[in-house]
Amino acid sequence: MVTTFYPPFHFGGDASYVRRLTHALARRGHTVTVIHDRDAYRMLASGPEPEPLDEPSGVAVHGLRSRIGPVSCFLTQQLGRPVIHGPRIAQILSQPFDVIHFHNISLVGGPGVLAYGQAIKLYTPHEHWLVCPSHTLWRHNRELCTGRQCLRCVLHYGRPPQLWRAGSLLTHSCGHVDAFLALSRSCADRHREFGFPFPMEVLPPFLTAESDTEPPLSAPARGRPYFLFAGRLEIIKGLQDVIPAFGAESPAELWIAGTGSFEPELRRLAKGKTSVRFLGHQSAGNLRALYRHALSVLMPSVCYEVFPMVVLEAFREATPIIARNLDPFPEIIQQSGGGLLFSTQDDLRQALHRMATDQHLRLQLSQAARAAFGSRWTEQVGMDQYFAVIERAHLKHSAQPA
Image: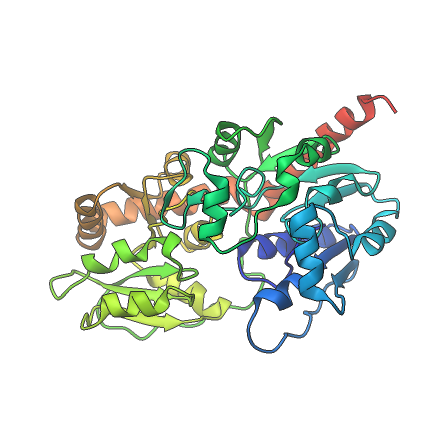
């Protein structure tokens, strides 16, 4: 596994996905080596650096560090190659691995790292970095991207333009990959729309049927019913459109679990609203209890998501979602029947009202969410699909001329 971030040195769901997949492989008797970039985490994180987590037998984790950490990250970001950590990565990947699976490689090695090692090579895009320098197709930090304005956009984000994107490094490097694995069909379609020339097949994410972290706690102390938002508090997550829908007349409260840079603005927006609660960071056990007892989990993202794990965490607890009618949520709702979509503020208010007052509807959506989780997104289903992908990639790899 080659990835920029790996728990606890991470900020989002991509690293958790890699660890979940790593542990699922280890449970099946495979040995797994993980390469991640602690320099990238140290450059972006605030506060003390955490201690590495314990890993199961058969898992080896290499956290790359250098004395010039930010410089190492900058060189990779500019040149698209692991300049400082390249020799160490090459040494590790010189081992006779059967499979090398790349994930978020933006700062661990850029596209150049795809040429390292000799094995079946898989690549899972956890965001839109392959076609978007700012990773999210959220143009100028204010709107959905509908056409390339990349130079102006990255400057709006305060990031230096990436020199390697001006050449053919990405296309050449991707030629080393046997299979690109999108987490949703909409993610694959979006890559194609923005010019990515290689085919992607869909390999959905998965969760264990039971929590693989800690047991759920008892029901949260509460009076009125509540809707739940769980995730980073950033402008792209869309909570600024949800908070105005909750007032004194609301049939339920809004509970917000998470932290982020947009939190002060969200708190300002919620000032005086007794029906809105900010819960801060929550443990995995607390979150599972919050999911289980919520009327619904809200997914109001204003940017193109790939496949938020929050959806599966809610579905595992038989909790439906209310999501914006934007990638990938129409696809998820069509596959599961486990929620409602909204496009406008009126749509959102109507969906909230229906979920809070129509017990039959809520039960129907709840049962559909849990059934879809069991048939589509458990670990067993996910690993069966994963090994089928490897088998197809092996046949393709073996058919290529030496």
